[in-house]
Amino acid sequence: MNKNKIVPSLWFNTEGGDIFSVIEYYRTIFGANYQAAQIIPLGDTPSGNTELCEVHIFGQLYTFMSTAKEHHPLNDAISFMINCEDQHEIDTYWQYFTQEGEESQCGWCVDKYGLRWQVLPKNFGELMSRPNSFKVMMKQKKIVIEEYLK
Image (cartoon, rainbow, N blue to C red; front, side, top):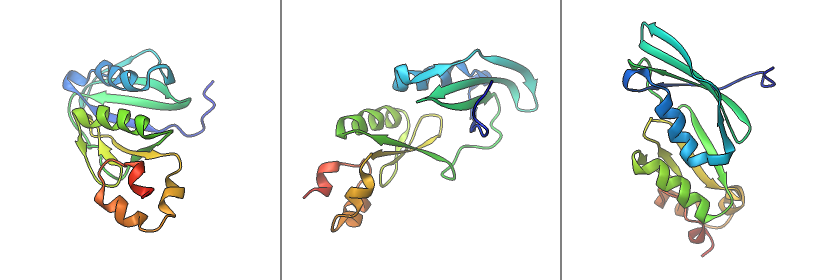
């Protein structure tokens, strides 16, 4: 039985409504911290072929849905924050998501499916309490921890 009372559901648009490409994209970056259930084909809907899949990322349950026709694009109203251990982890996520996506500002980026990510050090609150930290952050796209420590 599902222990999550509320489950975030993300609606992707892929060629042919194929959810497998989405599943594999996130499996590549999250590795052992990612599990996908069986793909559930819903068939032809008003948005074209549609497929669903439940996934767990770092133990959190999500539902992924993919349709052949875009219904509502993902936007900045929803983002996921990744609390990274160190600069290497920040660099790893940032490089992966921006390789086919795009950089934004202040630690935000967009992956190839349009999902927004905030890639931040786990001590970001502490870094932001330092003098001139806001000015440092406003100059950055990817967060570079060392720049806050100067």
